[in-house]
Image 1 (cartoon, helix red, strand yellow):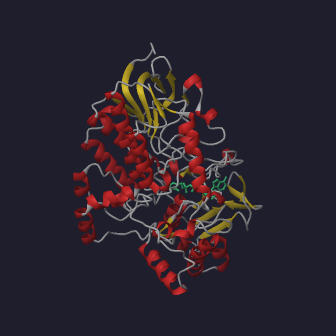
Image 2 (cartoon, helix red, strand yellow):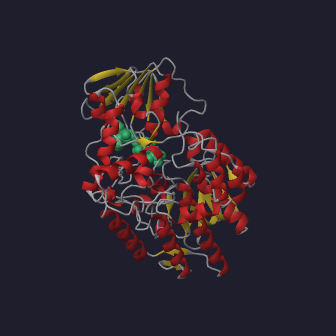
Amino acid sequence: MASATQHFDAVVIGAGFSGLHMLKSLRDKLGLKVRVYETGDTVGGTWYWNRYPGARCDSDAYIYCFTWDKQLLQEWEWSERYPEQPEILRYLEHVAKRHDLKRDIQFNTRVTGAEFDENTNLWMVHTDKGEEVAARHLITAVGTLSDTNMPPFKGLEKFRGKWYHTSRFPHTGVDFTGKRVGVVGTGATAVQAIPEIAQQAKQLIVFQRTANYCVPARNGKVDPELVKTRKADYEGIVQRIRESFFGQEHYFIPKSVLEATREERESVFDRMWDAGGFAFWLANYQDMFFSQEANDVCADYIKRKIRSTVKDPRTAEKLIPKGHAYGTKRQPLDTNYYETFNRDSVQLVDAKTDGGIEEITETGIRAGGKEYPLDIIVFATGFDAMTGPLKALNLRGRAGRTLTQEWHDGPHTYLGVAIAGFPNLFTITGPQSPSVLSNMPVSIEQHVEWITDCIETMRKSGKTCIEATPSAQDQWGAHVNEIVSATLMTTANSWYMSANIPGKPRAFLPYLGPEGVGGYRKKCDEIAAKGYEGFELA
Ligand code: NA7
């Protein structure tokens, strides 16, 4: 404590969507002294780091933005339905400038650790610049998919070509022209990147471990009339997405797919397929996530689409998912993904049929006993989702306990926003909150608003410490698990289930329902209204 060079009401870690909004809210609404630390050299978070070809949002841009700046909602013009990374980054830069946020953000600075001081109820925060500062509240705005998963492939150090992970792509871009390129992974990132890389590369080899169900994005310019209608209706839109299940204007069909006639469901599927985006995933028949039989009917439609798009039947079969239910892994949105496999220059190496990656050699990748010569390898192997970025912060709560110790068997939180034993810490879109199962800006805003209200209440009543009780935390964990165990989500080896990282304890990471983000918001508000039920205030 004595060594702290500066004192803040709050330290926020990260300057992406969450950190920017948190800073704005605490500084300009409550008048607090806030410091944001950001590793990058400017704002953006996810949109600063993920610069791979084809990187774009896959929620519709008209709701993938801040809704608290009403004027900006009217002024900002998105160039297409799902803008690319540079445009989203430009938007966040614009927000930072417009609200003069950068003056309270220290860039190029990584938080290397923080300890809670039980005598003063302050967090002592350390950075890689050798600073130590004290803060009443510590707020993590580190994102959910920011801790890169780079599997320890044997032999990688020997590779004489260039290799990149999609989440740490060079700011100068990569020229694939005339190159033999390997892409490892077929998740949402790879599905965006592969068609773009294929347009440049001389040869592209895709290394697939698990085939995914992709649905069309249908990106493009949005009809100016629709833009106008939406701008006129933003108040309604914002209310609807805040009360919705997924923070999107998508609603399940309140009927079983098994009750619909074949003609009826085909026409519904066609409509959603043509609409593009998350409709097929999030506005499908309501039993799709609960009944394998219902799920099979929806999945079958996508399988037929794959077979009719991919010309080589053997490649089509490899691209057809086997062994997991539709929708239980993150939905990738496809722009010419399946069509890309019709190019002569593109080859699919499937772990199940051709053999998995054995090692990286000096000149390429060896898989299934065969060597594939490559000039460039792009790893689209994802992230240690949700818990990874928080564990990496080296936080020490009461009695010096770490998150790695507390979460050795999976995350334990209260509402996904607080952790017992870590007082005055708030985790924006933390594990066991709706977070990655929603349109992120909606969930970010909900957490930021709730945290702001909580801090304001504490300050008005002279409280200096808030902490989730272990019993409230246990009950929340049981509730999260009970809800999800009624669905098919637990059956997949997804990153939602922590299954993408070897040795990570199998646990469902976000919170699913029962009424989605709308119900969750209500629940959080009720808890606040009851004097922060499940928390101890001192
Ligand atoms: P994902 O969805 O985790 O995808 C990673 C891909 O990499 C996936 O196909 C994995 O196969 C594959 N992978 C991971 N580890 C390996 C190893 N060791 N060997 C071979 N293949 C591997 O990450 P994304 O970046 O695509 O998407 C993350 C989120 O970012 C996305 O959902 C959006 O929210 C934005 P697997 O399926 O695990 O068998």
